[in-house]
Amino acid sequence: MTTIKDVETLVERGILVGVNLKKDAHFEYSMEELANLADALNVEVVGTVTQNLERITPSHYVGTGKIEEVKALYDETGANIVIFNDELSPSQIRNLERDLECKVIDRTMLILDIFGRRAKTREAQLQVELAQLQYMLPRLVGLHASLSRQGGGTGGGFKN
Image (cartoon, rainbow, N blue to C red; front, side, top):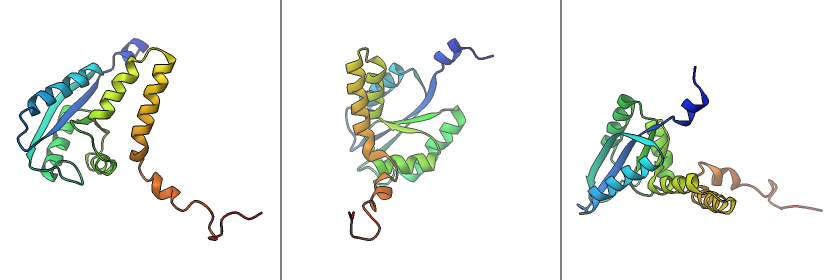
C-alpha cells in the first residue's frame, strides 16, 4: 500500500534536451547546469538528447529525427517529463507535447518551479505565482482563438 511518505518522495523521471547552436563553447556547461536545476526539483535525469544545429527548427526547436529519438528514449526509460535547455515558444511547446505525447517544460519554467518550491513567505509565494502565470499566459493552448470572437455576435456590441 502506498503511504503519504511514499508519495512525498515520488521522483519525476526526465529527459533533458539541448541544441548546441553554432558550436557554442559553453554548451556542455549549460547542459550540466540544466541537470543540476532538474536535480534541485527532485527530477531524476534518465537520459539526455543533444543536437548540433546552425539555427533552431521553428516548429519544434529540434529536428524531426531528434523528436523520434526523444520519444524512443522517453518510452524506454519510463520518463514522465521532457525538459528543454532553452525557452520554447508557445507553438513549440504545443507541437512537442502533441508529438511526444508527454509534458514538456523549458528552462524558464523549471527555474520558476524551483523558486515556487523554495518560496517561504506568502508574499514570495504570490510573487512566484504571478511570474509563473505571466510566463504561462501566452502558452495556454487555444486561448486566443476562443476569445477572439467575444463582444457580440451581431456586430453591434451591447445595446441598452
